[in-house]
Figure 1 (tube, rainbow, N blue to C red):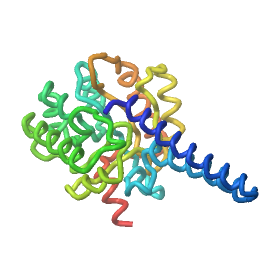
Figure 2: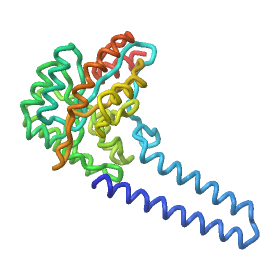
Figure 3: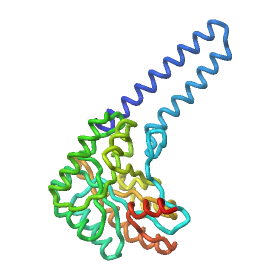
Figure 4: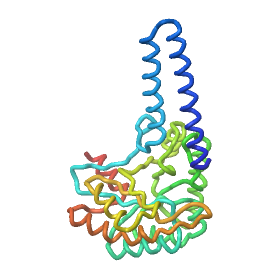
Length: 273
């Protein structure tokens, strides 16, 4: 399912619910129960808002537990990258991380790992953690259990075929959208569903200064930063702004006394609390 298809389905669901609530309100009104009619409309509006919120917000707890922030009483932050690998940007990101001595967690697409196995091998060889972003960036907002199981299986096979020896058992859903059934299936397969603290939106290529300034707002203890080193599909998006912003982000974090860790290390810190 594409992003547009998923959002269209959500809009249809919300619209259908709104029509049903309007019908109930009209029935109450015709029977003289104006308070009940108003309650149906107001309560229905709140229910629609909660429905939309639960689907569109990646860390919404009613769909299942998502790890999106570490301990705020420590100095750790986690740097993560989605949608890779893709040359030349993944290699450029790795160059910066190597020069700065910073670990990161890469949520890799299986199809890209098969295309560029040397990139995921370099990630692992240089001490970074390679995690799953699914096979092909399929939107999982409405996914059934078997669909996420297949995505995880194919992605794991792709990482193994690329030569990854010790992948992290972490899964980040594309856009953070994951149905309750898919969440249960992922955790049942031994994956820890992982989100992020807040988005930087570097995929929109807003400019290096903007990426840095947005990151500055959320560079706090326990933050999980989301950046992108790749993309999915025929449109080859430019990630050079993310690469150029990365040294500034690292420098800013260090000036605040923050230390970079992998997501797994942040999880261990949280479990030790």
